[in-house]
Image (cartoon, rainbow, N blue to C red; front, side):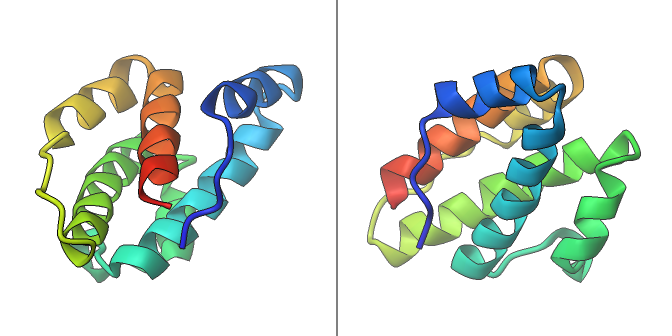
Length: 111
Protein backbone atom coordinates (compact mmCIF):
# COMPACT_ATOMS: atom_id res chain seq x y z
CA UNK A 1 0.00 0.00 0.00
CA UNK A 2 2.50 2.63 1.16
CA UNK A 3 6.24 2.58 0.58
CA UNK A 4 8.00 2.77 3.93
CA UNK A 5 10.67 5.46 4.11
CA UNK A 6 12.40 6.98 7.07
CA UNK A 7 10.94 10.47 7.60
CA UNK A 8 14.33 11.73 8.77
CA UNK A 9 15.97 10.38 5.60
CA UNK A 10 13.32 12.07 3.45
CA UNK A 11 14.01 15.42 5.12
CA UNK A 12 17.80 15.05 4.97
CA UNK A 13 17.74 14.04 1.31
CA UNK A 14 15.46 16.99 0.56
CA UNK A 15 17.93 19.36 2.21
CA UNK A 16 21.02 17.80 0.61
CA UNK A 17 19.48 17.83 -2.89
CA UNK A 18 18.20 21.41 -2.47
CA UNK A 19 14.59 20.29 -2.57
CA UNK A 20 14.72 17.99 -5.60
CA UNK A 21 14.14 14.85 -3.54
CA UNK A 22 11.32 16.66 -1.72
CA UNK A 23 9.54 17.27 -5.03
CA UNK A 24 9.96 13.60 -5.99
CA UNK A 25 8.69 12.53 -2.55
CA UNK A 26 5.72 14.87 -2.91
CA UNK A 27 4.77 13.35 -6.28
CA UNK A 28 5.08 9.80 -4.94
CA UNK A 29 3.14 10.65 -1.76
CA UNK A 30 0.28 12.22 -3.73
CA UNK A 31 -0.03 9.13 -5.90
CA UNK A 32 0.28 6.62 -3.04
CA UNK A 33 -2.25 8.46 -0.90
CA UNK A 34 -4.70 8.78 -3.81
CA UNK A 35 -4.39 5.09 -4.74
CA UNK A 36 -4.80 3.95 -1.14
CA UNK A 37 -7.62 6.27 -0.04
CA UNK A 38 -9.21 7.36 -3.30
CA UNK A 39 -10.14 10.80 -1.97
CA UNK A 40 -9.35 14.14 -3.52
CA UNK A 41 -10.52 17.69 -2.86
CA UNK A 42 -12.69 18.78 -5.77
CA UNK A 43 -12.05 15.47 -7.58
CA UNK A 44 -8.62 16.74 -8.60
CA UNK A 45 -6.34 14.28 -10.30
CA UNK A 46 -2.91 13.80 -8.68
CA UNK A 47 -1.20 15.54 -11.61
CA UNK A 48 -3.24 18.72 -11.11
CA UNK A 49 -2.56 18.63 -7.38
CA UNK A 50 1.15 18.20 -8.08
CA UNK A 51 1.20 21.17 -10.45
CA UNK A 52 -0.58 23.29 -7.84
CA UNK A 53 2.28 22.47 -5.46
CA UNK A 54 4.33 25.06 -7.33
CA UNK A 55 1.69 27.62 -6.41
CA UNK A 56 1.22 28.35 -2.72
CA UNK A 57 -2.21 26.68 -2.54
CA UNK A 58 -0.77 23.25 -3.40
CA UNK A 59 0.60 22.63 0.07
CA UNK A 60 -2.80 23.32 1.61
CA UNK A 61 -4.52 20.95 -0.83
CA UNK A 62 -1.89 18.31 -0.07
CA UNK A 63 -2.53 18.70 3.66
CA UNK A 64 -6.29 18.26 3.22
CA UNK A 65 -5.92 15.31 0.84
CA UNK A 66 -3.31 13.63 3.03
CA UNK A 67 -5.58 13.79 6.06
CA UNK A 68 -8.62 12.53 4.12
CA UNK A 69 -6.75 9.67 2.45
CA UNK A 70 -4.95 8.59 5.63
CA UNK A 71 -8.33 8.48 7.38
CA UNK A 72 -9.83 6.47 4.52
CA UNK A 73 -7.04 3.91 4.92
CA UNK A 74 -7.57 3.85 8.68
CA UNK A 75 -11.27 3.09 8.15
CA UNK A 76 -10.38 0.32 5.67
CA UNK A 77 -8.15 -1.21 8.36
CA UNK A 78 -10.82 -0.87 11.05
CA UNK A 79 -9.04 1.90 12.95
CA UNK A 80 -10.53 5.11 14.29
CA UNK A 81 -10.19 8.27 12.23
CA UNK A 82 -7.81 10.98 13.44
CA UNK A 83 -8.56 14.56 12.45
CA UNK A 84 -5.21 16.22 11.80
CA UNK A 85 -6.50 18.47 9.02
CA UNK A 86 -6.04 21.75 10.93
CA UNK A 87 -2.56 20.79 12.09
CA UNK A 88 -1.57 19.74 8.57
CA UNK A 89 -2.84 22.99 7.04
CA UNK A 90 -0.99 25.12 9.60
CA UNK A 91 2.20 23.14 9.02
CA UNK A 92 1.79 23.46 5.24
CA UNK A 93 1.69 27.23 5.63
CA UNK A 94 4.33 27.69 8.34
CA UNK A 95 6.69 24.69 8.48
CA UNK A 96 6.24 22.32 5.50
CA UNK A 97 9.17 20.09 6.49
CA UNK A 98 7.26 19.06 9.62
CA UNK A 99 4.26 18.22 7.42
CA UNK A 100 6.46 15.95 5.30
CA UNK A 101 7.71 14.24 8.45
CA UNK A 102 4.23 13.70 9.91
CA UNK A 103 2.65 12.46 6.68
CA UNK A 104 5.49 10.03 5.96
CA UNK A 105 5.37 8.81 9.58
CA UNK A 106 1.62 8.16 9.30
CA UNK A 107 2.11 6.41 5.95
CA UNK A 108 4.72 4.16 7.58
CA UNK A 109 2.37 3.31 10.45
CA UNK A 110 -0.40 2.34 8.02
CA UNK A 111 1.84 0.40 5.61
